[in-house]
Amino acid sequence: KYNERVEECQTALKELNKELHLDYLCAIDTETFNKHEHLISNETVKKRARHVIEENDRVKEATRVLADGELQRFGELLYASHASLKDLYEVTGKELDTVVEFCKEQKTVAGARMTGAGFGGCAIALVEKNAYDDFEKNLVQYYTSIIGYQPEVYNSLIGDGAQYAQYRFYFSYFGWICGRTACFMRNYGATAAP
Image (cartoon, rainbow, N blue to C red; front, side, top):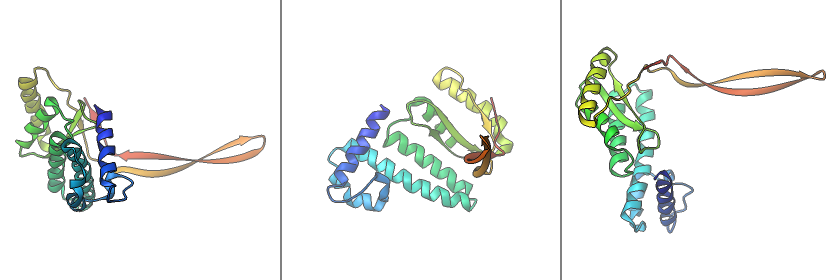
């Protein structure tokens, strides 16, 4: 199924390029897509392209709102992303939708969405720290009553995010000192517990 989505996006790009000259779908925004969506003949392919382009717009907005500390708006973007993944890209499934539907009803959850390529996997939720224990207990109850088995729930904290760090390693070989640079991504403050 994942490969089908890739092919559908490639088809959308090819059809949009009848008038536009794009290297990839995210090279245009939603407004530009709306003006040219008539070039895509297949409605399913059009939905896939709409998801990709609107998701790219959401990512750009998410970058801004996170930098401004607007967690409530970020949560709204998470919900919008999940709805798009469900309705336009069609990769969520009953289990992931159940988690997100539960989250929408919780006042202590700012937002939630599935993660990964879809067709199973995980969902993330932005939950108020002091409400987590009740959230987990109630989610497990709700999910189990609908799906029939308990989900695995992991708690993690928001950290400073990935950061770039550069290290130099020196090796001595026949008297020559060679420098080699390696790059690492570090995430500060993140914890996870089953």
